[in-house]
Image (cartoon, rainbow over all chains, first blue to last red; front, side, top):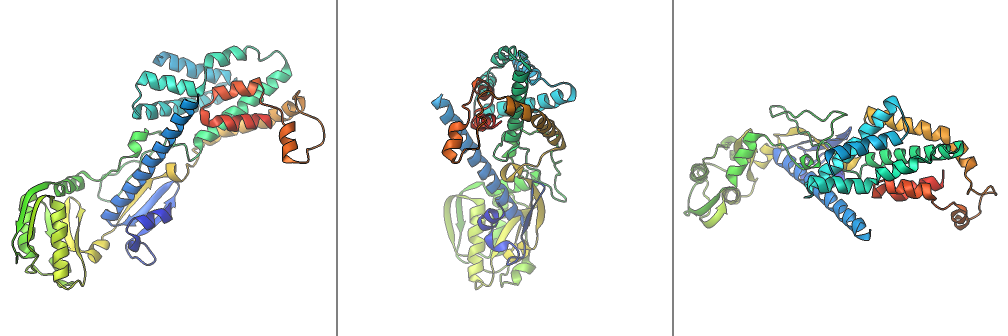
Length: 68
Length: 339
């Protein structure tokens, strides 16, 4: 998850090379320090992942229903 | 299928688990939460409430059939032991399965916090948020309003050759009624001044933010490309500055992402799981020794032999598998075979 985000969103901004970005996970929370712009991109990426995951699950449900 | 029938189903299923007191309450609560989340998910996908209830119940199985079968329980003590084991395992599988990270129907919404911005209370252990809310991102109202202004489409943009940055900024500020602030001191560090000229622009039907991007790129190049002028939205203000200076203005936010990386168990879920674990452990040994189909011979030498000697899923397994959501079924049957 962390690698995905730091490679997709403002790749040059993250520590140690970058100066503005830091990222970590604590108790199911993704904690991000970065600019507002990067924060929006992180949020967008999470939403894209969720949408893709939901879509994949919906396709799986449809396939099983069709089999029945 | 009415709400009442849905409630009846939940009560019946909880009763059929043959538990009492707090255990039954806890399990019923978990089942209810799971089913309600599934309803929310189905309705978000366009199902009507009735269709969603029907589909959810189809996936969970027919409680009436379960209840009918339950009448056979108690004929012999051994059968009771085996059935108790079966349902304890099934319930444990059910609980574990919907606690797994790939199950997203009950995921809490993202909590976005930032000093000075609207704080959103993170979900508590007992909170279950609808999937539709998961996709939301909470940006402060003032920031959103400022950003929306940048999406305004200008029918014509005419900036003549030699227009200075200060004039271009004033033009855009006026067109979009923007709250726009320029950090001239920071821009001076990369040789961009008020009088730095931008290229001529003659555009049609273009977003205001795009024009601002083009103007800032033009002046950055005109200044020798030492640095890059850009903008960001902070506290409802569009701030134009250098990339470096804007990068120094960081904020910390926390995003709920347990649905994507794995969900920690809540204390309530841990307690419920523990109840099932104990029940499975205590009833497993007699059930194993009493299983009529289980061969008593020595351990098979190969995996094929092991598979051949493994008892086929009996009527209990079929019944159980029917009572579980589709994604639990292979796992549940396999678990029963090995019980």
